[in-house]
Length: 167
Image (cartoon, rainbow, N blue to C red):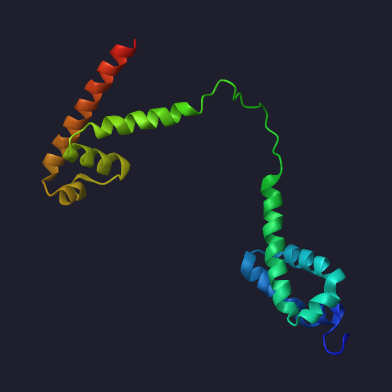
């Protein structure tokens, strides 16, 4: 025992090392990751052990250190560079195009009558079957199909006239 009551580093690791490793495994659900995190935490704690012992609860400190060590390890893993066969040509890609297309689709959908818009959204964005859409819209499944048919015809007509104007 060092410092009049707190165990020295080697004694503490012998007494509580297995419990710390179990904690690491329960946290990471992987034996090798747990061993690496515990080892990293103990290596970092060794030079500061006297101060850690004076804090009063070295086990709580080391548990937090194990968590931090595991987080640091997977952060480093995801930060590393990955070589690729051919670099992507990003000079010609306009990142605004997908957003503009999405905005155009929502603008077109907003031009539809309420029931048609709701039917289209529930079918194509929510993936619901006609029977569930009919319950939500308080109509029959046949009405749902006709609302969707009319909405799509309207969207096709609008898109056709828009394409003619831009050409």
